[in-house]
Length: 434
Ligand SMILES: Cc1cc2nc3c(=O)[nH]c(=O)nc-3n(C[C@H](O)[C@H](O)[C@H](O)COP(=O)(O)OP(=O)(O)OC[C@H]3O[C@@H](n4cnc5c(N)ncnc54)[C@H](O)[C@@H]3O)c2cc1C
Image (cartoon, rainbow, N blue to C red; front, side, top):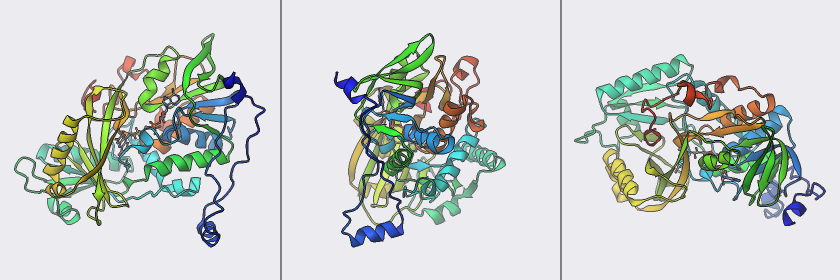
């Protein structure tokens, strides 16, 4: 009964806060002792029915809601989140954004994402701390240099910025690296200057606020427990706060995609794996770009608070636990030390894990499903944070128009049946290697 009560469409909804953030609102609040700030979004209760229910209040679900409302005028939308906004991978990642991809299925999609990042703060009136500080991928052998040259050329042909640096150019950017490491000497790097970092949880908060201001209901602490399908067409979802009817249901549950899709009888080409991240104690500015090691999987940048933020490989076995294991901690630290021995002087402050939705080819899925009115957004592997704006933009396009956006036409669910894979790393059907 509780469920049907809170699902009543007659429940009053408080007016959404219409406050616009600016230098003037900041100054006015400072003069008033900061007592006039309105909540960034309403704590909405579920209504009985929506045009679109989005499952998952991570970056992708919230971005989808924002673009549905702002670009397609579809505002009778609920984002249903089992925890709180930002509790999933969107608040757990290492914040790196870039569009330095090789293959046609990925390059235009991630470049659209980078362009959307570049205008995001104006679009959603929220400081997401978009910082285009550059992403530098190191190479350590002639073969790797050739592969990076090929990727850089493919990027430039597609209108994406990329520069191949030699060893001395890399040294000028990052003199602290171990250039003469006995096993992995650094020969140079592929630099994308427009890549960088974005404050991850601010992205979730900013999209949530922007969607809410257009009337979208963001419903937290509400787990989807079932998807109702009649005659091959989706009719709604069951939740821990009661059933919700919906004309369309859009899945954006990232690491839980397989579990949620199974509620509609779908088996996805996805494995769920843990990925860990780490942050050091805060120190003075040491590194002003993002650097990735070319031999092991290791990437590092510095947050505005001064902590070095870094990560490596997934834990290499299937799990839904949001925590990692010590062998991977050791592996990540070894890779870091091989690239930048000075890291050994720092203390690690925190470590955590998130659940990655790994596809068999390492590329994502934004597509219809065999169930009418049920749409799928998943398979983000290590790289879904940078994809957040384009993912939401293209998913909203698909939901609103029932046809894929032009940059997402290859991100199909059936490519695992047809064999038209987008195997960016050339690792084959090995989700643990992408
Ligand atoms: C440690 C780590 C480092 C990473 N580093 C980077 C990086 O540097 N750059 C990059 O591009 N990507 C990175 N990623 C990947 C990126 O964070 C993810 O691919 C991306 O955030 C996934 O999309 P999302 O934000 O929508 O996911 P999430 O934030 O996980 O959102 C999915 C939401 O669905 C909710 N949900 C699940 N099941 C249900 C249900 N039954 N009912 C209701 N709600 C449900 C979850 O609670 C969750 O909030 C990293 C990930 C991790 C874990």
